[in-house]
Length: 152
Length: 370
Ligand SMILES: [Zn+2]
Image (tube, each protein chain N blue to C red):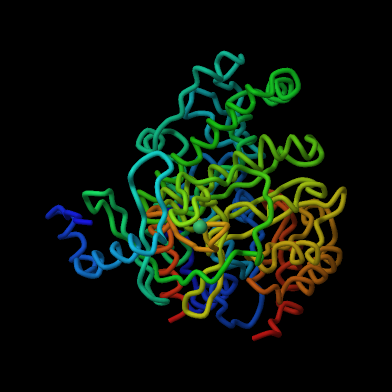
């Protein structure tokens, strides 16, 4: 898979400390393992990688890298521990590429600096894989900054 | 009074109160539970002003609130809000009242057809509108003069509250029976409006704390299925959209009124790392903190309450007793606890009663788990 990166996005990546090679590897891993989210109505995918202290996401079409974002809060599981039926439409616009299930928008517990609290995640109910959207990553950035300030 | 007429805030107090108040979210040890009696126009009464004066002078209102926080030794947050937000932006008329918060007198939606034609404003339009201009005047004053008490709060209520600020409550309740899909549409639009309003605040201040939940949609006025359809579901959708738009991270679920039959469903409402849940009543009684902690303690910060009727008309001993019971039941809740009042502190509540509430937290709210 040959993915192009616009100069503009590449500059943003550099500004945010992401390396082009790492992002390409992250995408390559997602493509070979099949572990990624795929838009239910299009050709866009979200791959996930990184480590416990930083989860990185790459959003891409078959030809182009569209966005990269990350969060420091580490997702440890579903809030409340299990996936119960809930009373509102929690189906997201994404499906798990591996098993085909629609990813659900559910609260997931996240840990950062010794504090565990819920956050809105995208969950594959079959594979038990967790993702977050780019907007939620922005919300989490504010949350992380508050925790860094208050826990320091 | 202009800023220069107030005595300076005690910096040591502020630092201590500030660290107490963040305890619930960051698991950082502090000596005791913090108290938030949701002081709004009550602050004006301490300065011998009335509610009308409070709401006509948002910059002064925030000064009075911040100084009241110091006086009572409570959560240092510059609250400024009232229930009837979001009508004016869409053409409603509002009436300033002497002894209570502003109320809407004329609403923009009169018929079911109006609901179809009703267009939700985007965040830029709302930021320029009458509600947020007033609200931001208070918040800007807070940020400038009391930076440590600043919180970028957006007052939304739930979808039913927004809906009934747009259309008369009797019309909405009639449609709920005759044409429920009209109310679906209305609540959907209310949800979209909530997203715009939160975006406006987060664009201005870099973060946003939304006050949402369900006040009208309580067990006294609606059955559980109606609460689910017109409040829980559209509110959940709106909160999810707010978080997905990056306009978090604070979520304060204020479930006013009686929620005996529906409180369990809110366990699955979307949450962020800074979520508070407060429930007013269990039938006719104040909602017991034990029950609150049982349902929400492993998810978010629990806001245990003392009956506002008691704060308004009870004796200090009665307030103290109820506060003591609630704080003992809640202080070691796994994700933090706040002691407060079931709703806004009544404008003319006796100051000794607010003091009794705080005293109970000081006497019985010491953390034992830290
Ligand atoms: Zn899967």
